[in-house]
Length: 200
Image (tube, rainbow, N blue to C red):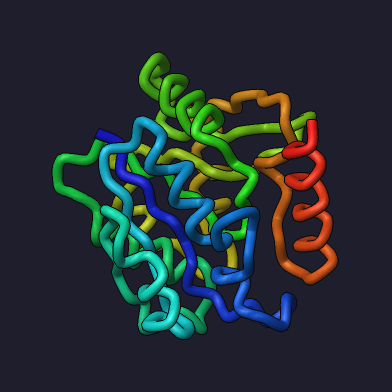
């Protein structure tokens, strides 16, 4: 089974507002991300919360996901990755690590990565758009101890760069995998994209 970990613990400092709960289409950003994961082939979903976790959790408690709280979220994304990996099922073969600031990622993209992982002997699967790697990323459970010991400054790149022979890059036709929603301008740009797509 593939366990998904959605990283949603950050403080949204550059955004200036809590990005997880910003409106995105008919739902919030975090609900949009979770809808994509729920519609995919992942077997379980772990949501890592931290900053204002009670407020965020109240918006997703109706969904069939497991919420874990990263008390050390201020230490950065790596602390949330570790928190999420610790919470996945013992029967998981791999972890699909997604980020909450990529609400354009669809179930089709997620499933394409899962199929690539299942059909390959590679243990790390990364989506790539025009040569640029993005998220979500799949990491085999064989690297569990490596993940739990990652350097906070280098994050998952440390594992990727240390095991190039285990990496499979999957080309995708959309830049959704590299579109990070860090600032208010980023958010407005993504809103314009979904507005345009709904009109087509």
